Amino acid sequence: MTPVTRRRFLMQTGSAAAALAAGGIAARRADAARILVLGAGPAGIAAAQALRAADPRLSVTLVERDPARLARSPRPAGPFLPPAPTVDAADLAAQEIGLLVDDVAGVDWQAGRLELFSGRREAFDRLVMAPGTAPAEERIEGHGARARHAWPAAWGSAAEARRLAAQIAAMPDGGRLVLRLPAVLAHDPALVAARAASLAAMLARQHPAANLTVLDATLDGTVRQSFAVRAGDALAGRTDWRGSGEGGTVLWTDADAGEIGTSAGTLHADVVNFLPALGAGTAARLAGLADASLWCPVDAAGRSALREGAVVIGDARKGVLRGTASAAEAGRSAAAAIAA
Ligand SMILES: Cc1cc2nc3c(=O)[nH]c(=O)nc-3n(C[C@H](O)[C@H](O)[C@H](O)COP(=O)(O)OP(=O)(O)OC[C@H]3O[C@@H](n4cnc5c(N)ncnc54)[C@H](O)[C@@H]3O)c2cc1C
Image (cartoon, rainbow, N blue to C red; front, top):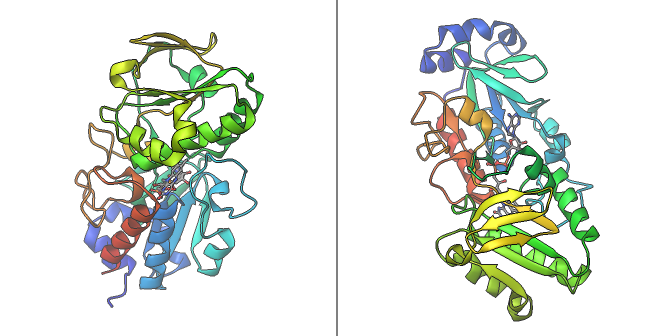
């Protein structure tokens, strides 16, 4: 296999500015291409490992803002988290994959460097973006930052997962828990149905007299059918599922009053798990890699259709079925193309 050198990278990307910006780094590993991978989810980790395996001379560093993503144990309890990671920071160190814990605030493509929240700048010869997803702006009257805090999505955030679990534990026995689903789902409907089934099971265990209402704005009945199979007759029978034609679309919210407006009237809720519409992670959007859909158009090797030389893998990609296996596979495919 042809070694992946800095020189080859810079020739491929044609970036003289990147060569200058990366000058200090080059001294560290004279002939090693410097690859930064943004995001230590399944996609970023698979890409980093495959790159190192393809050419041990590569300098590969993961940039991750949430160290909890690399803690196999102890994991916070609760049913609202994505699958646990299969590697931790010690495994990465053993594989000579660098780890930088920081938040990427921007990408300077011209200079070939990441701007980090800490104020640091990190030069790269090649950048692989695996930032996952982030909420999309939705025009729902009254639904601002305060409502998003009070009614957590708990979709990937451990802090929100703990908050939602605590809210459910503290809700009144005869109260109402609402699960809100947006019109367009980013993930496999089976994962969303699994969320509804966990909520129904939690309520049955902790507050048997409480009610689960699902406001489902999706246009087909896929999640509802999957939920019925997963939850079983007893739990499905006690769940108030409202489809898009039955008041399932949220029109306005008042989190302070615990009220949700729908086309079928106003609903009072004690606890709300509000799943937002999603798009590619903010870092990918800010880096100019997402189109008007807020997702990143790429080819099978993760090469961006919007910026030459940029690579996006995992959930941030446009038009893919999102899940752990697909994210990791995208990481491996991109690594193979980069190292080829
Ligand atoms: C509750 C839940 C349950 C799920 N259950 C399943 C399941 O059972 N099976 C399945 O296949 N899939 C499941 N999924 C989906 C699966 O978790 C995702 O498809 C997968 O994690 C996507 O991998 P990724 O690497 O693309 O992104 P992510 O796993 O989202 O990782 C992105 C990483 O990038 C980091 N990041 C983002 N922006 C920045 C920045 N600016 N600076 C630094 N770091 C940044 C984030 O902190 C994060 O660690 C579930 C998801 C959720 C939320």
